[in-house]
Each structure stands twice: as C-alpha cells, then as structure tokens.
Amino acid sequence: MAVPSELTRTETLSHLAISGAALIILANTFTGEGEPLIASLALSTLAFSLAYCMVRWLGPTFVKAGFKGKDLSKAHQPLIPECMGAVCAAVYLLVIIVFIPFPFYKDIVAATSGGGNRDVVLHVEHVQQGRFLHRFPHSKLASYLSAIISLQTTALLGIGDDLFDIRWRHKWWIPGLASIPILVVYFVDFGVTSIVIPIPLQPYLGELFNLGPLYYLYMACVAMFCPQSINMLAGINGIEVSQCLVVSLLLALNDALYLLTPYPHPATDSHLFSLYLLLPWIGVSAALLCHNWYPARVFVGDTYCYFSGMVFATVGILGHFSKTLGLLLVPQLANFLYSTPQLFGLVPCPRHRLPRFVARTGLLEPSVTPWPRDAQPHPLVARALRLLARCAFSPCASATTTRPPSRRRATSPSSTSGSSGAGLCARTASPGRSPCCNSPSASSASLSATASPCSSLRRTTGSSRRLPFENGECGCAPCRRPETR
Image (cartoon, one colour):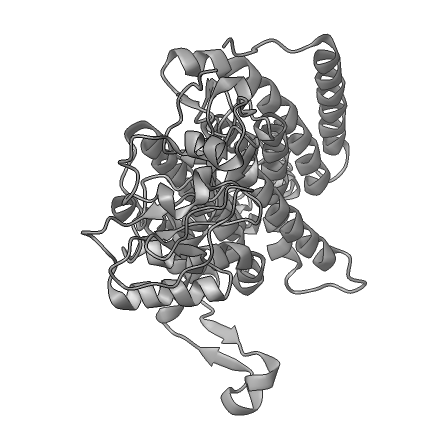
C-alpha cells in the first residue's frame, strides 16, 4: 500500500495562506514592545502548518527506513509510517528555540540601548559593569533553557525506545533524570517546598505544609509519572494525541484565567511562561491528530507519548500548578490503577496491550488472558478477579462450568463461578454475541480441538450458509484463517 506524500491543491493553498498570515503577525510584533503572547500564537500557527506538511512528506521516507507497522485496527492491516512523534518533537523544539528572543525583547532593547552611539562617552565603571546586563531577567531565561534541555533529553529517550524497544523497567526512571535541570532552576530561583493543604484539612494541618527535600522527590515523581501515564493509555487510533490535546487545552485555559484578572496576580508570569510552552505543542498535536485520527495514516510512536508527558511535567513544575496537573491526569491515573494487576505480574501481560480487532463486526474488543489448566493463578488472584467480575470491572469465565450451547441460537457464556482448578479466562462477554471469540471454549484448555469455533457456530445456528466475515476471513482469534464455501 502506497503511503500518500503529496499535499492536495486545497491543502497547499490553505497552508500557504495560514503561514503567510502568521509571518505577517510575527513581523508586526517587533513594531511595539515585542508582544510575546501574540508572537507565540503566530509561531504556534506556523508549527501547525509545518508539522502537518512534514508528517505528510516524510511518511514514505520513514517507511523506506523501516519505521513502519501494521495497523491492527483495520481488516486489511496495512503498513503505515510510525514514530511520527519524533517529527512533531523536532518541529516543537525548533519553534520554542526561535521564540527565545520574543519574551525578552524589551529587556534586550533596554540592555543594548546606546551601545552603538559613538557620541556617548562611557566611564570606566560603566565599562566594568557592561551594558546594564544586570537588568536582564536571567532567571526567566534559565527556566526557559532548562525546559528545553529536559524536553530534548526526553525526546532522545522516546526515539531510542522507538528504535530499540527498551524494556519498561529500564526506562521508567529516565524522565526523572531528565527533570534535573528544571528542578535545579526551581531550587535556585524559587526554593518553595510548601504545599497548600485542602480547606477541609486546614484546621488540623494548617494552611501550608513544608515537605522540605521531599518536595523535589515529589516533583521528580511527577516527571516520571506524566510520560509513562500517556504511554500506557495508547494503542487505539488517535487516543494518544487526543488525550494530550485535551489536557493541553485545559491547561491553556487555566493559564488564560490568570491573565484576565482585573488586578495584577503574583502567578501571572508563571502561567504566561506555561502558555509559551503549551501553545506550540497544541499546534503540532492538532496537526498530528489530522493524520492519526481513525482511520490512521501514521503512528505517533513512543516519542510523542514521552515528549508530551514531559511537556506537561515541565509546565506543571515551573508554572507551580502540579496539583492542577494531577487533577487533569485523573483518567491516566485511573488507567494506571486499573493496569496494576498486569504491571505487577498478577495477570499475564503481553508486551503491547492492544484490543483485538474482530473482522466480523468491524469493532475492537478487549484482549483475553487465558490460563492453562497446569498454570492457574493463585487462589487469591482468582478470587479477586471474580470479585471484580461481579463489579463489572473485569469479566471472566470458567471453562468447567459452561453448558453446551442450544441448537436454536448462539448463547453467550455466563459469568464465572467454578472450582479453582478450572481453566480461568479473563474476557468480555456481550449478550447475543456468538461464542466464536468470547466463549470459554476459546480458552487454552479447549483450543486444541480440531474443529474451529466458526464451524461450531454454523452447526449451532443450524445454517449451512457462509458467515458474513469481511473479506472471507474469520474474525476470531483461535482460527483466523480463510473460510471455505
């Protein structure tokens, strides 16, 4: 399958118009006092157009270089480019580096005014001090540069993971090392290690609670959690980019509320700094979402997930709103807690946890974890899974308590109950769905049968006609082979 690399005429004209308007706005900012927020908006628009075009142009190049993968969410499973998050990360880093002079435009003008006038006689003490460089906000520049260093380190981690498929236990702590530059800048410029106690607990613990050195450990944990949380909630077309885009927009809205206050707010500069980093990321993420939304034409790769999580961690640490960031990442935290049985080895975990595509229905279904009879889970684990099944969190089935299906219609297997020696199978059962994919007969204890589940379904329904599987292929995991007439 050929990967499209050329822009249509409409796309070309649209991006030329968008880029031209952004360049005009960007040039107009130098006529006043710099207007860094408007310049950031213009550069974010340029980042959108550049990322959109580069993802389209570089797709075939990535495929030729071996950066390609099968899209398991489609019936034909085409090969499409992957690791496109590296392109977005490169565009983003380029844009925020170009943006460096804009927030400091007034300071640069003030520090260099009169420096080229030969009629001005400088005294010795002025020469020793330099051109009034003490007025330059070095702390803000240090924060900005530390953010760039941390993001570049995380981009290297993501690219390395896409290239070499690094194991989870070897890479989860690397974002903590990447956060060292921003933590050092935070210690030098701010050094505040107190957290605000929620109002219901203030009568008991006070308004503030000083964590001391543990505060920096907490920030490092935030930097490690954010990239991993985005990377865990992945595997479906568009889910990585869409969740990051939603979080970015909500963080930008939170920052904008501090800029619209009728009186100067002490946190205005911090939230303005956060906007400078978030707006270009919103631009490149929107461009990538146009290509990654279902049906996806590109894959984002681990680079995008790690880089996006580090963007959130950076703005949360340097913008001083880590608790607000934590509230926006509650879905990712819930996904982490839901995945703990697999993460800690209580339930067998495949390398890439992906839902299974069923060609018969054209839908994605949760993957199944079968246990052989000779390798059953611990009784406590089995009891916990059955408890979760009753709460509709983790449906499971037992292979020994099922009854043969009726000859009148296909029946769905009932929920679990059975002896601990039964073949337990965590699955998702739906009423009226055939036992081709979800029945306990598809567990490892009965997959050795010679007859395929599809032929069993034909005998069950009493029909000799060919089942309507797409492209003549069976959609169940056990057989998945061409069907004969």
